[in-house]
Length: 400
Ligand SMILES: Cc1ncc(COP(=O)(O)O)c(C=O)c1O
Image (tube, rainbow, N blue to C red; front, side):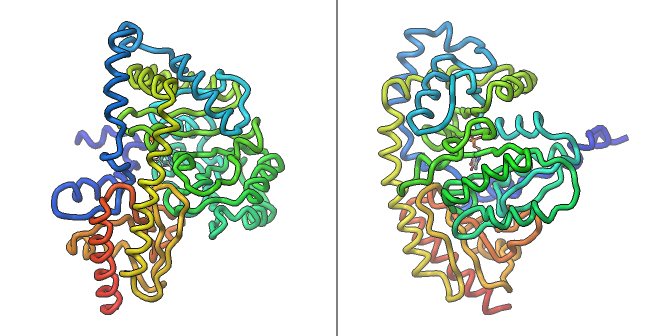
């Protein structure tokens, strides 16, 4: 018997994420990567973190290096509670907040806590790949709601739900409503309201995954968590507004749900990294967070504008792309005969990488689409990478 025969069914079915596999290749070589979703490391607030880390270790080393409760460091939960309230979200106490090991852990907990095999979930299409991977561990049935320039098309979703004669219970709708990963699209206020109505009509909860709204330039529509309390589970992360290496995120949900998530978290990691929690807490308490966000916004705006200009100059006729107000991604659509999975090796050999759009489509559609990241490459790399990408697409199109 081979060692591989020992794998559980779940492990046998788990496949490596295409993005992660690609990132490995890209690290080795002169390839400009539009593939990952990483912040610009030149923008990390290193000085503030250095100072805070020194102070924390000087003033309370015993607490900062100790185990923490599973729910998370009290003062950090308090800071997040105030922060969410100041953003207009509906939350009644810090007991509704659970600190997580990145928001990825929150996604995993949602699947564990809410799904039995065969339960139904609603995802937007395209959707965030790592959420799909986490939810699939629980073998759900998936309903796909389409997106357009106004974000998740709640009207189309309503029709789908009305036309559904039977089927398993719908447990949740998962959405990234602001500057979505992968599309960059933002769901309008009207549609957000309709989604809340649907949640009540059909008895499901909405998971609002929100890593990017704080980096948006425009005036965002209200958080879904600002429209309703009971049926909205909110999650966000310090990964894009501090640094992903902290592995720090949080979720906010009604106390019943939050305490169940905490019980399930115990078997995953007992608690989130305590030192990270203390540093992030001080970062907020000293007023650095809002100032840092204001520093990030223009820096990412410059990169986004560079990418939009570079695409306009280099993409062939027939290609289109989104114009996000923030986040880290632009979504490009090529004419229908293109297959961006097949084109990727050519792009990589021309020295540029992207993520093929099919990865974000549970239905297998989206063959002619791609996700383009602009937060990580430098402005020079954005221009050179767009030139290489345009050249690849034109050559591929000519050979079709
Ligand atoms: C939509 C979305 N959700 C969740 C995450 C996970 O972030 P983290 O685990 O670093 O908090 C990401 C990261 O890119 C994301 O784009």
